[in-house]
Amino acid sequence: MTMARHHLWVASWRSDGGGTREKISCRAQEGAVRLWCSLLVGLTMWLALSAGCSSLPASVAALATGEAPPEPDPTYAGHQHLPVSPDEALAVLRDVAPQQGWAVVSTGEEYDTHGQRGRFFRLAPPKRSSETQMVSGVFYAEPTGCYVRVSEDNGLPEILVEPLITEIKRQKGYR
Image (cartoon, rainbow, N blue to C red; front, top):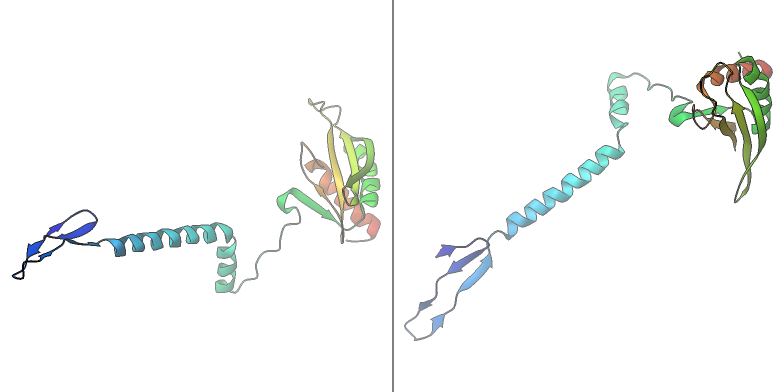
């Protein structure tokens, strides 16, 4: 009897009746192959779930310690949510931008395939800035007001966010 790589071979032999028995082969490692395939599929699923549930450790830690999870950041993903309509946000931006050295050069309506989506603005940077590149962005409408992308390249510059929020709070009577 010899052990090949994937098969178990039994040598042929002759019986007293004159007939010969043939070689018998079977998959000796079939169970091991199935085991490795199962482990590979399990590992792949575990990695996919680990990547998809990256915020899970913070939630579990908050449950274990009994502390409340931190409040979500309103500028998450570079968006600033505002409790006013896009038109009101644009009007406030026209007032605030010159105070910070920026100038609102042009405005307009932003459309998509479903109709009006928000208000477009283009800002000229301060004169003291070494860059002469204009910055543009959109106040997108949403059910609770609007939001704007915060970016130095394509959106509302970071320096204008706080003055804009402060002025909106003042106009709305918020503290």
